[in-house]
Length: 228
Ligand SMILES: Cc1cc2nc3c(=O)[nH]c(=O)nc-3n(C[C@H](O)[C@H](O)[C@H](O)COP(=O)(O)O)c2cc1C
Image 1 (cartoon, rainbow, N blue to C red):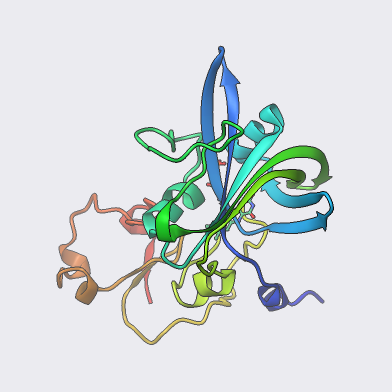
Image 2: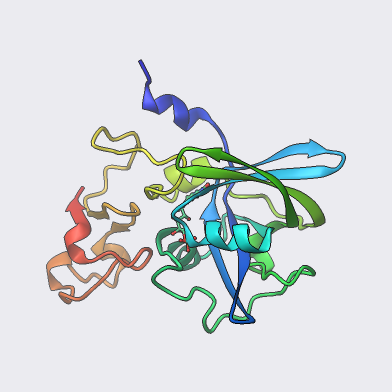
């Protein structure tokens, strides 16, 4: 028997992985949220990132053989998580109108100031095919540390009340819910777990929201919300 709740006891941090693709001699950038990132060796330092094969970031890492990691803090703006974790570069240009710092390897890093706990620049030295995902092994070519605690995956779930999307390796189909939520009565986004409460939204009742209102985190339509 596999008890899915057991997987919630594995601990992770939350990062944004970025990479590059050359299209007709022009650089294009993309990135995604990832929690499945861990250090594999120290001399030389190698970090592994498990990336879903359907993600655009996967294609970019395969092409450039480079990826950067921005380790996020609890101060990260949820809109940034929405853009990089719940939307795909297959549908939106995530780097349009952004002014992110550039890594020394020519790949951008997402986040600055109190959003960021650490930065890594990596070049792929090998990869492992694992069903839906590829685990890319990246030798670290630059690392920077900031004196700010990283956000844990547990904090993301329990405090921010968010869910992982389908392409995250930690995705759990919550027809059997495993996320403990508060008693608050509100509408919850079935895609990302964002809770709509009128009290936190200028006292605008759910029924008074415009029909084209969308989830401020992941962009899901109103139909994707259910009453908690
Ligand atoms: C909290 C969280 C953790 C995630 N972890 C991973 C991960 O470790 N690996 C992965 O492939 N996708 C992960 N995802 C899902 C991707 O971020 C998501 O599918 C994204 O839309 C892919 O974007 P892209 O197609 O532009 O690359 C995670 C998402 C969230 C919100």
